[in-house]
Length: 494
Image 1: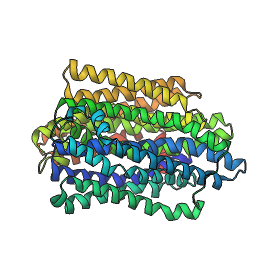
Image 2: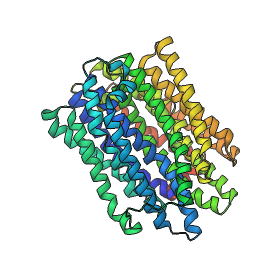
Image 3: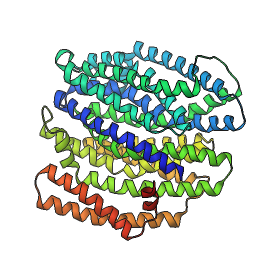
Image 4: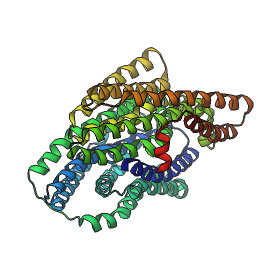
């Protein structure tokens, strides 16, 4: 089970990055609070960050890895292929960046119509123009990540976001008093440069990257598959853009509430979900070339079981402790009591979909490993349509505000997972999977009782969260051990 080893390596590096990410968000919340100006930055940052998520967390890996493995097996010059892809990718991103900078006012109008004519609209446009060059840097990072993952190197690429977080932290602390919110723009660009710098040496040592405009059928095939794959990962980001559009109409601060809540959701997703998806993709691409259907089904079943075992307690924990977690992490400085309440509601709404969003990763990897890029696109598109309809109803009909927007995103995740499962070309061993889910539900029920008891006997948020996480996690895994959950042996063995 190589993918478990790769997942844990990726997860450990991501854990370091996510801890620094929390410190970054704490510093931002303390320094700037929640206002129209923070909304302006988060709206502008949403665009390059969206490209980071599309490229860095899926699409490049999904297309490049299986094709690279295939060419390598056929003894075709993979270095020429790699250099050409890198060159074409760079040219495309440079052009795209120029277009976004030129048309920034129109883009700001589309993604934040509630800001048009308001005090912070000009700031939004200006920040978009200043921060968008980050996508050039992050596109290189995503490509380098795919190259290193192929060689079984997962820790270093997963660690690079930590450098971005460190840059944000120092910029916010030392520059905010001079240039206000624009300190975060400086942090983004410097962070991107640091990310590229740390990966250049190992990548150039292994692949000898250089500019090359070679074009053949394999490169044509890469881009033919890349477009629908980007669309697949990008459609999910469209859902976030729609949320941003609606949030800009709900109230000042709504964009920031969703940002902070989503950042907390990214902890279990980033530590486990993305690593699981990338690792499964690498191993399944090898099995697909060998046409070993039995290994694919066994590997997929193990990945799905692990996804359930990790995501169920994480989802329940975030929901039960949402208020206390936001209280500890952000309730200080300019972050008000109303900010605490609204962010907590957003976190509850998003956390209901955590199980589904983590399950998406290994399920999509199955399709990408067999070079099917269309099915994940269709699944994501259906999920987004449901999400948009639900968001409109939840916000404007049922008046659920920020919570309604977050809940609609969770609907998106579950709809996508159902579609992917129905379309799977291989079988999950359902009996084994349901046994693991059943055991997880029993274990999380005991954990829930414990957390509620802790909340009843203690008042201090820090005490509640620390005791709940430490003892709750121990009780959860102890229950799985008592129930003889087989997946635990694999985790501890690795």
